[in-house]
Length: 413
Image (tube, rainbow, N blue to C red; front, top):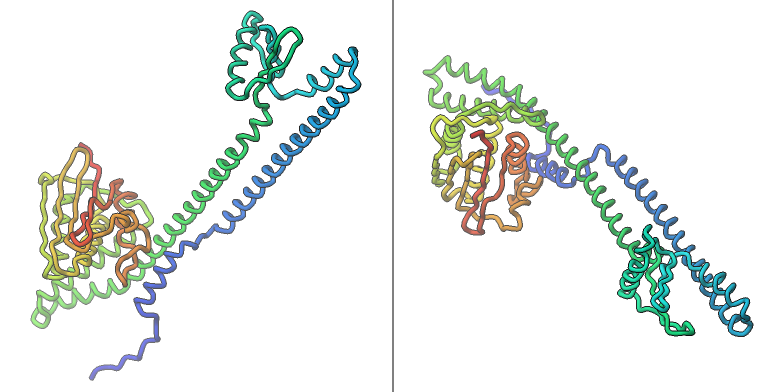
């Protein structure tokens, strides 16, 4: 008589839990130090704004004083027109015109004589004339010279922009570049925080999964040993298949345990492992998939890999290929050796990937499947590039014709 089992408490369905997890990982706002980062950026922005305000206010004050002096000079000029005398001419010229100009570089030319103001001259007196003549030509490219009557002929005044004007000219560009730099640093800070948080979430999830699998896995291994003790009652073929699945679960547990710590790489016969794993996978996917493996790696070639994690990459790529073909098509795996690297191409005849999504397929949460988490390719890329120092990318893909993923692993020649 079968024993009745009490109904277990209601729990969220696997799809709901999966959807909730995917939603949390897509949200990207689980930052452990987000408040500190925001406060730091806010304080930096405030300091930058205050500095910008005082600097701008300083420029405005200087411009205000400069304009006030120009108005005062104009007023004195009108006064000079009516009340000037021979004695006051010289005093007025020096006190109100020459002395006032302390910033604008000026060169006065009269009868081939050059008189400078606000210009740093060469130390050698013999070079001054030619220097000023050349400088006057340079000034002429910026501003047309002012002609005046010197009494015994015409003279010319050459001038350039003052340092204050130059500051105003480049001030907006400097501020814009400053904002760009600040924005870029803020982006790096948030990106680093986000990657760090994602890594912690992944590591915690992987470690917890490995821990949770340990207990039922031990029980399954005990049942397999029990079945072996009674071959007349339990079909040997079934027991062997069950044992393979238990070994598979042990492999998966080892994979999850390796996430978050730098795994050990050991020389392995890469081609043998791939062929063995594909043989296992063939019996667990659609029988309408035609498999083709081309091995051009020298026999016995040992490649430094972590077997458990590398098989995980092959599994993700092959299962994605099967899903893309909807269980019907051809899956090709080609292994070749090139100078300094091993190249593995995994191709399918599925629906393909638009070129605009070639890089996005490796982003967490990106999935074209309704029930997908969007983590398989992200984990695969992490395993290849972070742990094996190789590369994983979409070599080519065409909608309606298929996709080829390429793995490259560095090897010592």
